[in-house]
Image 1 (cartoon, rainbow, N blue to C red):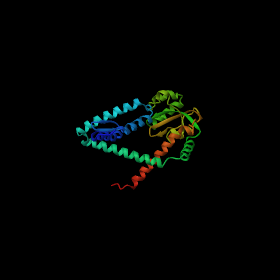
Image 2 (image 1 turned 90 degrees about the vertical axis):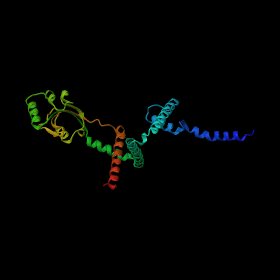
Image 3 (image 1 turned 45 degrees about the horizontal axis):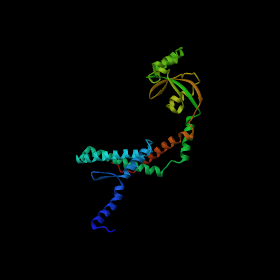
Length: 259
């Protein structure tokens, strides 16, 4: 079989065009939407655990991209890309995207080691201690008011009743109950005060923190129930990585010529 010149030309055009069409999910007013863009969105959706990859998901993504392209073309026709506010937002978005790429590159080349994570966990355990404390408190605005509360307690008043006058509205109606906690959960002056108390004892003097003056009572103690290394490993790794990033940023700021 032989092709006439016109038919041969059409066949060649069709063959040449096939890969291009195969690489596009759609073409909107002459503007192609690459299949790679659909793949990227689908991959992101699946990675976020929203739903598995499927023909239905791909069709939904395709329709969304088509709708967005139609809206984008209309916005360009109306000149919105030249609007000063839009330009500023685009610059900000571009900056964020590029910075995120830098961060990903830094993290991939400066990963936190298991040894660092383990060392941080051991430091946390040492700081937390081996006891949890069940503490109550009454918060007063000034030292005189706090001392007046202590005097009433010595006179036989019940802690739970006086706690209703506490400035800490979150615990006033529960007898000043702060529940079980580690000393490291509180400001140091506060924790230093209650770790020295005996069970059922109220501190002799008010304790000052940025929140005000506290009258503290220790209800009970128990062995600390610390999370295992495996339970907190991801959080520790993330915290250490953030510290590394912060140090990296501060180092670059120091080197920058800032006027």
